[in-house]
Length: 350
Image (cartoon, rainbow, N blue to C red; front, side):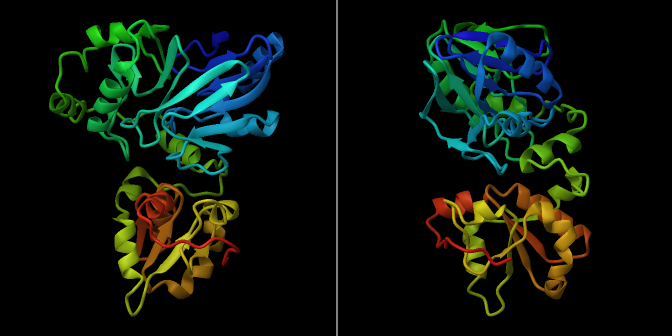
């Protein structure tokens, strides 16, 4: 296997390639380094087959979607990833081959709901779940320190001790560690119970990443458009969240809510389907088309997307435009489907 770490900074991007077929994948590519990645691929005579994000990043823009447009490489993320235009959604235990190199998906949530690690036999790419002598913060929306502790102790720490650890970030100049070293020396996990870990993570008091507003929501929506007035974190946190079962119950009321699906048309008609009677206005079109919703301004509007992330942005945008009864369906169509609630598939109502 051809292997290189390409960024030489706190954000890590890994190139893996099959030496016989020259098929390659990039793990956690950074948008500002696209030229470097393309030059490296050309230098080694490799064809980029896949770009893989281990999770939705909050401190840098992903290069995955641009690299997809430039090279045709498939975008791969966990099925809980909120962004559209992901070519392959993977789940725990699935395997993906890059030529003769095989990657096994380990679902390791906690830092984010879509966090995963990639196990390649002698090494594991841990994203931001397990860092070298540290762990990923769990205070972002959807983060869960208990889930993170379980991911580390029940998934990653069950790998052989000699397994090399390559995280998505490092802030101390380290290049790699091993599972055995992290078991013994990681100060956040070693010797702690689950409850002790949760208490520790809930009181870290870390500052937010620089430019989180310019990074997180574009990564979640795969949009790089100045016309989208992305809300602030404070505005997002004020959006009322409803579970799928609560939404389903409201649909039986004498005056049911207006369901607004903000996914792309291909998602609306895709494998997850949609809820009967939904209006479809994609997030990228919502600012320009919000006027179409004026006749519903006195009604309860519930925004819906794949995982409940883009729709939270949509609900905050509508609230900022003066819509007073706006909610979000938490967990989106992923949770709706997992709870076996009714879906339709077919032509959109837009």
